[in-house]
Length: 101
Length: 177
Image: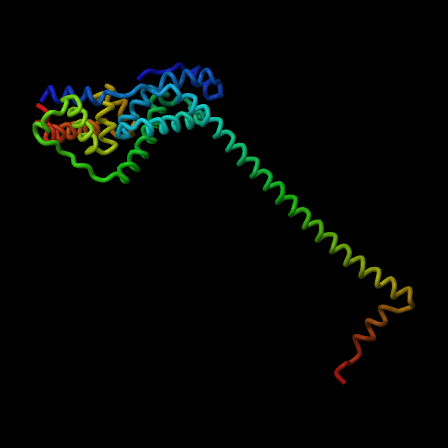
């Protein structure tokens, strides 16, 4: 029994040498991992910048549209006044008109 | 287990290549042994795992604060990586015939028969049992060290090893006289 156990342990202990090319492969793996990390970070950053830029552009467009509507309305009032229309009288007049007839 | 000095570990964590090489030279031989012995003694798989361990280590070294021994920390990473792969292998592999007949087939070289017997015994063990057996019987680690690496209690490891050896003796003890 003792001899068998001894041989068994002796056999278990047989391990091939650490492959000499393994360190080179590890350095390659480290470099690859670093490249992947940088690429992912850059992609996320670009996506964030593009999203922020798009949101800003949309918001500015909305603001510009609102300003144009207000301006158009103001210009219309001015034009009516210049044409001799009494805007306030017309508002009052049309408010009293009964269109149900 | 051998230890590297804290300064080298700190430099390696900060990306110093020479320091990292010293860390590798210090710990890789033992990591290689543990991984090779735990994953059914397959060189290709062991090399992949060791590569993965040290690539991860290179990234994690800066986070190591010295609260435990560096060797324990590294071997723990290796142990976890080896266990994961060994369990995957076990699930894929079919059940092998575990027992060898008394005396063995005639004309076969005794050394080859011994090696065959060893492989058959190992095939019946779980990855945890293989690791425990190798760590204690082959690599001479203390139960304290094995407990630190595997995360199991010393008491549980002692009982497990005792039962494991008994089981091997019962199943294979009379072969290859």
